[in-house]
Length: 190
Picture 1 (cartoon, rainbow, N blue to C red):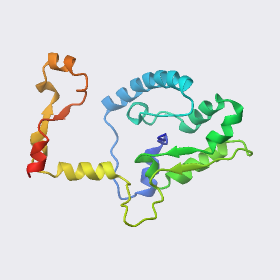
Picture 2 (picture 1 turned 180 degrees about the vertical axis):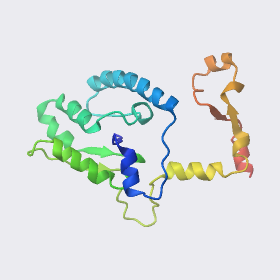
Picture 3 (picture 1 turned 90 degrees about the vertical axis):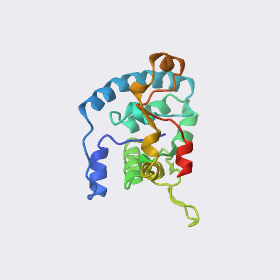
């Protein structure tokens, strides 16, 4: 599961005063609202088929949902004898789940919403690594992207979306981003 609080901008500002946050462009906000409806339709279909696993595509749902409410609705549709077990086995992973103060806030919201008799346990993947030989994985994808973008050959590898022909796009439905890597071997040569 991946939980993104509705006011995550406030949360980031609260714990990282030095970071300057920029508001997303209006076009992105429009895409967010239209994508949310489709994501919920797919989500409704999936949750009835497989209630033991809950997955969210964060790029589709973004900041417009009350995640605690959704978790409670899903678990309420599970047979009663399994509900307590599901509340006791919640695992959150992803970069957002490693944001400072996130664990405390999520636990507080869930405990406040749950009945007093329910046993609740949430685990955060890679949150409490005790072994000093294993690096902390917080923001690992961001750090990797930063290192990659500093490479001199990185921008030579990118191709704009308008450089693709419509026929090629129809043949290969995997091309959905505005930039694609032309030749990854250039990265290894530098």
